[in-house]
Image (tube, rainbow, N blue to C red; front, top):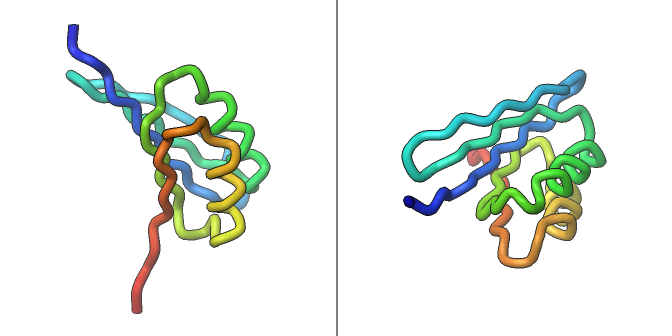
Amino acid sequence: MTEQTHLAFIILAPGGASSSAQSSEGFTLTTAIVDSVDAGVQLVRNLQGQNVTNIELSASFGDDGLELIRRAAEPGVLVGRVRYEP
Protein backbone atom coordinates (compact mmCIF):
# COMPACT_ATOMS: atom_id res chain seq x y z
CA MET A 1 0.00 0.00 0.00
CA THR A 2 1.34 3.44 -0.99
CA GLU A 3 1.80 5.97 1.80
CA GLN A 4 -0.50 8.97 1.37
CA THR A 5 0.98 12.48 1.61
CA HIS A 6 -1.64 14.94 2.85
CA LEU A 7 -1.20 18.60 1.88
CA ALA A 8 -3.46 21.53 2.76
CA PHE A 9 -3.91 24.96 1.18
CA ILE A 10 -5.92 27.49 3.17
CA ILE A 11 -7.16 30.78 1.74
CA LEU A 12 -8.27 33.66 3.97
CA ALA A 13 -11.07 35.65 2.31
CA PRO A 14 -14.07 37.62 3.60
CA GLY A 15 -17.19 35.44 3.67
CA GLY A 16 -15.17 32.29 3.08
CA ALA A 17 -16.55 29.01 4.36
CA SER A 18 -15.67 26.16 2.04
CA SER A 19 -13.53 23.04 2.15
CA SER A 20 -12.85 20.10 -0.14
CA ALA A 21 -10.40 17.25 -0.41
CA GLN A 22 -9.18 15.42 -3.48
CA SER A 23 -6.97 12.36 -3.64
CA SER A 24 -4.85 10.72 -6.28
CA GLU A 25 -2.25 8.01 -6.07
CA GLY A 26 -0.08 8.92 -3.12
CA PHE A 27 -1.54 12.37 -2.41
CA THR A 28 -4.48 14.02 -0.70
CA LEU A 29 -4.98 17.76 -1.11
CA THR A 30 -7.34 19.66 1.16
CA THR A 31 -8.26 23.15 -0.01
CA ALA A 32 -10.25 25.49 2.18
CA ILE A 33 -11.46 29.07 2.28
CA VAL A 34 -11.90 30.58 5.75
CA ASP A 35 -13.17 34.02 6.78
CA SER A 36 -10.82 34.62 9.72
CA VAL A 37 -7.49 33.56 11.16
CA ASP A 38 -9.40 31.98 14.07
CA ALA A 39 -11.35 29.83 11.59
CA GLY A 40 -8.02 28.83 10.02
CA VAL A 41 -6.65 27.82 13.42
CA GLN A 42 -9.77 25.72 14.06
CA LEU A 43 -9.46 24.06 10.65
CA VAL A 44 -5.82 23.17 11.31
CA ARG A 45 -6.82 21.64 14.65
CA ASN A 46 -9.55 19.66 12.87
CA LEU A 47 -6.99 18.37 10.34
CA GLN A 48 -4.84 16.92 13.12
CA GLY A 49 -4.88 13.17 13.03
CA GLN A 50 -5.25 13.16 9.22
CA ASN A 51 -1.47 12.99 8.67
CA VAL A 52 -1.18 16.46 7.13
CA THR A 53 2.51 17.05 6.34
CA ASN A 54 2.42 20.52 4.77
CA ILE A 55 0.09 23.51 5.12
CA GLU A 56 0.34 26.46 2.76
CA LEU A 57 -1.50 29.69 3.56
CA SER A 58 -2.61 32.48 1.27
CA ALA A 59 -0.74 35.79 1.53
CA SER A 60 -3.74 37.37 3.26
CA PHE A 61 -2.90 35.56 6.54
CA GLY A 62 0.03 37.93 7.08
CA ASP A 63 2.91 37.28 9.47
CA ASP A 64 0.73 37.18 12.60
CA GLY A 65 -1.71 34.70 11.07
CA LEU A 66 1.18 32.53 9.91
CA GLU A 67 2.53 32.38 13.46
CA LEU A 68 -0.88 31.47 14.94
CA ILE A 69 -1.35 28.68 12.40
CA ARG A 70 2.16 27.35 13.08
CA ARG A 71 1.35 27.16 16.79
CA ALA A 72 -1.88 25.26 16.06
CA ALA A 73 -0.24 22.72 13.75
CA GLU A 74 1.11 19.43 15.02
CA PRO A 75 4.87 19.19 15.59
CA GLY A 76 6.67 18.36 12.36
CA VAL A 77 4.03 19.86 10.07
CA LEU A 78 5.60 22.38 7.69
CA VAL A 79 3.61 25.63 7.48
CA GLY A 80 4.35 28.27 4.86
CA ARG A 81 2.70 31.30 3.32
CA VAL A 82 2.45 32.49 -0.26
CA ARG A 83 4.18 35.82 -0.77
CA TYR A 84 3.84 38.18 -3.68
CA GLU A 85 6.88 40.13 -4.78
CA PRO A 86 6.67 43.46 -6.64
